Length: 332
Image 1 (tube, rainbow, N blue to C red):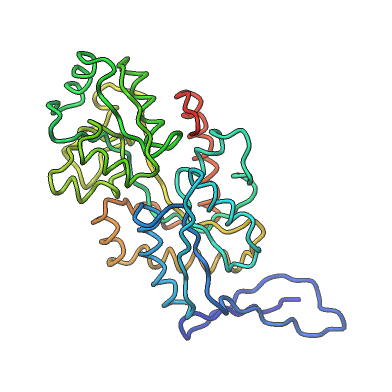
Image 2 (cartoon, helix red, strand yellow; image 1 turned 180 degrees about the vertical axis):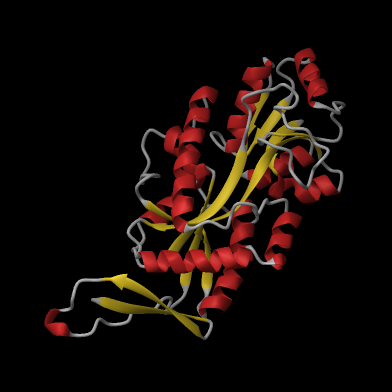
């Protein structure tokens, strides 16, 4: 028989019908309501990074829609593995969800042993945004193009320093691949996160970096950093005049960051589907799209189902695993 499972959100309700085995003795199945108490959103980084920015954008809207608080819990450390493990091992009841990023895919190959399985321990909820990596330099660097930067590095072997948001991060892997395919001798300088690496570039401690635009966008606008190229597969709409590395003949240094929401594997599908519906609805309102674009996130492609996001995660794990092997990147 069919049992009705009702989910309430912001004073409205809808019903999800699931096929369930008959109750013993013909008794009616109890209603499962979600959420009935605050939901924890685990962010595996300190406040201020891309994951935190997106969490703080979407959490108030989820709270408004559901009538319950969505509380951000910043758990930095271990190249995001601490917070990610917390999400993986949480009860499978929808009251702990995680905001993850590209590190989930990278770490699957980077570390020999992890306290979770990136492919098996999570249920995808929704894609939040993507953003390409960009090659940026300090304004004092005389190079005005990638070609000039390569020439500068070759004229000063071992003297041009590239910041990274930590060893084994997307920015680190991009630096290693760029070094390999252009045959230049640069210094790799890992920092503890995207914000510290950006600070190092802005302060002139390093000369260049691969970075995500959400970290750098205000500084680029203010002229404190200069973008030379996009490492993604296509030009970025907010930087239409900036070429891709592929266009410049530098193949194999593509990198696009992604951010999304996951729940522990085994979380009931009605909860996953409700969370997906709320996130997709708000992510595609003109207000939220405008905010995402203003922060240099690309909201394109975040309209899919939870199943779509699960498939996306598998593809990203395969792609970044290949990039890690090719770069020779190692964890801290």
